[in-house]
Length: 528
Image (cartoon, rainbow, N blue to C red; front, side, top):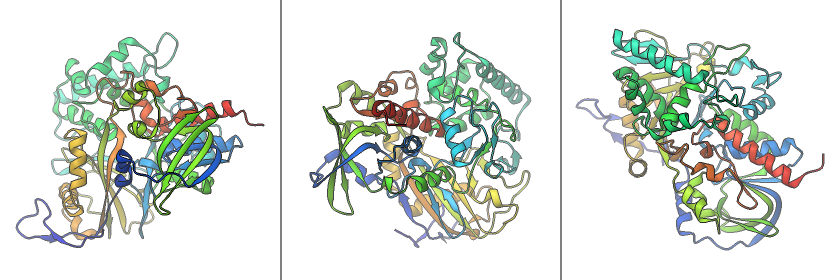
């Protein structure tokens, strides 16, 4: 799929310029779409495994990790793609590993017990993971400078727009954060936080849940907040975390973004993040190394059913042209909810209709290999996260940032573009119909605003398409009942995916994966 064709770079003037070479990559949508029409051969081989996990994203890997820690390693993880990781997948080139999706983990709140224990086991938390202020491995804390924003020809520290902000803008900034701090401090009568991570730990407060019935844009306006740069800032946050415009995102989800992060650390400031060259792919790499042969890739699961003896999972192996049937005692379904109607044979109608209520945001991610870092420009220096005010995308992160102080040579920039400007179905159609060269031209056009020297520095530009990158917490979804329908198992099938929180966050995926694994362990009651 590599392309070397000459192409117009949008906005570049009269003369065509040759784009750098690159590939058009993406999730296995062709194999996934085949589920609609079935046509898979009936299984020619039968195996027995105590536990089968459907999906090798962070939730599925966390479930397998928890089972293994309890001594149950006769587990099979079935992954559709050629590598595990879900939207935490990563790539590697001659310069660096780099993310194809999720690229950081926030400092973990006290409620995120499962994620804390996982990171402690992997060496990212040093000492007691349940400490009020745990100590994180210094190498994995994001180095300074962490983030900057480009506006009106110069860079500033931080992402809240200060360049060009008026006195009224700044007054509204203060008002907005005062409101968020009040929500952060709010507690239910049972002592639970109003907004927690995992979402399942949030207080079931009817007044707060009512926020789900309005959009985040409506929330701002109802609070007398109409500052254009404030609206840009909040919309950026919704597009970044949810792949959804703030005019569609649930206000409950939008407030959660700001009011749920109260974590502290022994050796890091509040608001710090953990990151690696490959983003959250670092976690995937560690788990993949531990689980090894338990993970089967290119495994297209096409049927899951319950029976009186356990559960049956049928999957197709494209490389072998045949299907395999697994009889299992328990199944953990760690795949996206929208596949439920296609995979769960005999699932009750309420579960099928609930699954159809889930919406997904399409994304495009590009990795640019550069001969050297671009010129910094006026203002704040190159940071890990670099955002362009009013840009089509969300800006870029620098894969080599953690080593930039000692290795200032070639680098990789990872650029993110949520297709949040149209409805998901139309955006997915556009995503799949547009070629690599056109996407590459759009990426370069966006990034050349602050970096006019970018094309001359870029030696390769790969594009990755995510048709269903993450669940969309649109108005009415968080507390509308659809995700809650999957809290209980269906027979021997336990559900585990960040979809069930309505937000595609690392902590949510780990929470559901570990929760499902512990439910399975209680059922199997393995010997100590």
